[in-house]
Length: 236
Ligand SMILES: [Mg+2]
Image 1 (cartoon, rainbow, N blue to C red):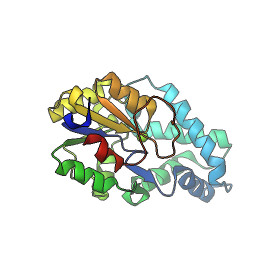
Image 2: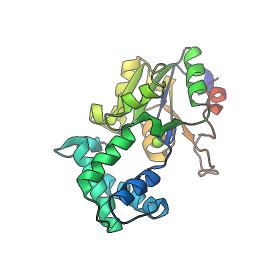
Image 3: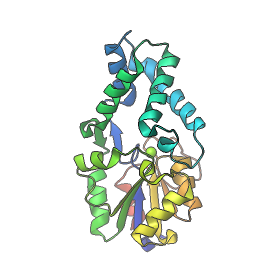
């Protein structure tokens, strides 16, 4: 489809509209170092990534991971923190570390919008497109978006933890489009994950754009954009 036919644009959040500064590895290193042996962000980085993959492996594909344990998202993050501690062989008490990190990442000041995010979203809304968020995130996301002034233009904010299904499952895309009242064939999803965003949205019958700021997927068959403002041209 050419760009002129879209009625809706849906957005991933992490790595697409928002990033954290300090980075997750930096925040983990800071809080770990306060509770025991000093560690650096360089040490934590690969461990954080491996723990993320391991935790993802433990939950059923498509089912919201944060609701996959009896204790809900706090239990999930507790498992994640313990996985990080085990891999680092670090002595910090996990519940204390969990409390500290949960508070740190709840603060919307840790989250930053990528260049052009606010302007691009405002411009797409001004063009009359229906905008939505589709994010694999826990229940803290709506307050973070409010804190950043990023919520106003979104008619629907779908958070996996609140709806019980996560990307790439078709259901999370379908329910968002139903709420917007837009058929999948007239909607574009934008995200940074080839699997969760690009494949998920394509599977749901939507057009997809992969945000690829560092040209990691150059030469592959994805429709890519290198910045958020580049979407304005794509949408037309
Ligand atoms: Mg993402």
